[in-house]
Length: 485
Image (cartoon, rainbow, N blue to C red; front, side):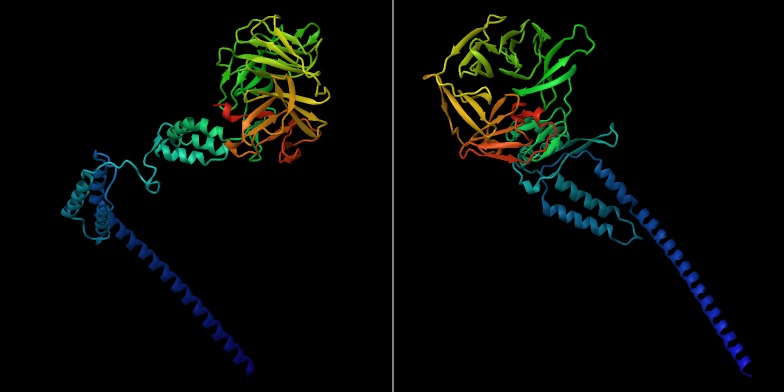
């Protein structure tokens, strides 16, 4: 008797579950049908709204396309009132149409505000300034921004706060107007930038930002090597072709910032002087290439070669003569001053050309220099200085006294002066005030036993290292942006 009762129980339980499943399916179907009906009602409602607002939209487009004289300033109160009325009209009943009289009243109010005689404002607060004119070039892919109008004073104010070269050049690429302003302010901006290190054609290393800016140096000729930087230009040793017979080499000048190449009328570089092959280690200009008295000097371990722009031959002077071996040379007061291992100064007057060089020797007693140490000559404020690196540990600076004809030790040239040295015997002065450098110091690199950038403090006589990461530190040299503009 128990078995049939159990069968009936499970039978009714199965019927109950089946009924619940059917009810659930029915409710789902009913919900989907209600959603479809709601979407259909909303689409009909939006179509009615679009048709009802079509006359208002046509009138808006016609009013926008009218030729209206631009206004320099609008009253905030009247404009807000018009906007409120326009919002009320747009939020009206969707089934009703905007009457012609209501829209005409709104249009009359707009025209009355626009046609008001308002005195132009000569000064606008920076808070109220907006980008008022943006024009795209339809002929370019995606549109090219041609003009983003801001007052020039505001753009100049923005440029003064840039500390990175990348930000400055990105600013100049925004539009034509901003590019024009950046060109106008380039000289002032570059004067506030510290010198860069040019690293073997890879680019310029900013040791203040610890960042390498890639820059490809190009020339119309084949570049053999980049010698040095002088008067705003890189001095390039070029050739027309490696397969040219006879093999000809010559110098070219390239602005490292703008990329403009100058081709001064310098003679072809001789391949041999006697039996010695002519290698170029150091080079410098006496003046910019645009100057009529521009002269180029380059040297190696054997010779010093000089020429003016327009000369047909080089003036050759041996480094080792009867007075001793020349340690270093520089341009000073329109002449070439050279220091030999006896401490004497040789004055080479470039007014005499073609192996008729006028040479004057200033003999100095008690020679303080040694041929074992690296030595530089530098012109600072009309004075001639000799900088000697003693045992790669410290620097000794001496000033030449023309009245007594002797070298005098010098320990302080002011907090505003900085001296930059490199391994190519080039020395440059700069003003520390412009970019916040440490005055009365010597910055140098490339001629110690290990890589790095170092600064020598003239007060305490100590050398400190600065963060620097260069692959070709011994081939690098200083580039001054302020001289490139």
